[in-house]
Length: 213
Picture 1 (cartoon, rainbow, N blue to C red):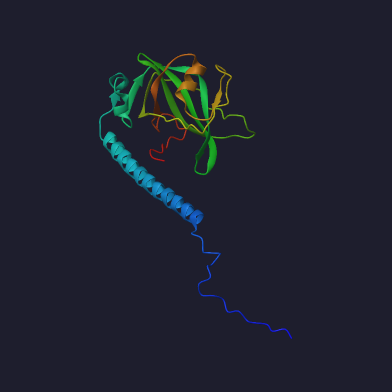
Picture 2 (picture 1 turned 90 degrees about the horizontal axis):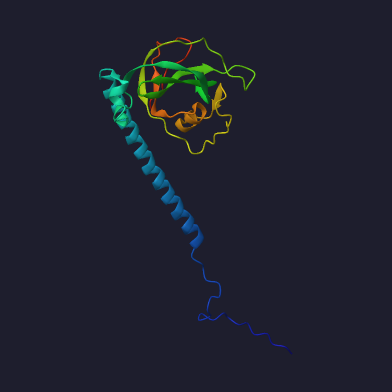
């Protein structure tokens, strides 16, 4: 006769499957917290930067118009100031692509303006794109020897790669207002800033500049 003995588990038996600490989840959560904190501080910095720029624009608007020759040496101090310049408009238009206004696609049109202080790049304003692409919109001929506008220092977006290598061929289609690209197309040096022309200079262009993006 077989006798089956029921064995109760020993209280001293060691658990062979202990609960593991969630290292991976902890690391992922820690990284996420660090990233969110970094983004938060970045947003605060951007907010402060925009507020500072708006104050600068407000201050500049209250100052008298300056001559181009007076700002050459310390141009960085005069961003957003009104500037008068005299010279001669150079042939050849630059079309800066992918510019939106009122929900419509278009271009910012730029020209070189030769002055006694060097070639000043003028942003003439925005024109709506015409079909079919990639044709660029035409505008009425311009002729002037004096111009007024606001001094603007452009910044390069490193994510934008320029593809136009047909230097000296106009009209030139560019992806951004890149001073080095202007120089390569013109074959000459240009001043290290741009003049955003005043809205009342020529009605065919839209000149509602966005100071802070």
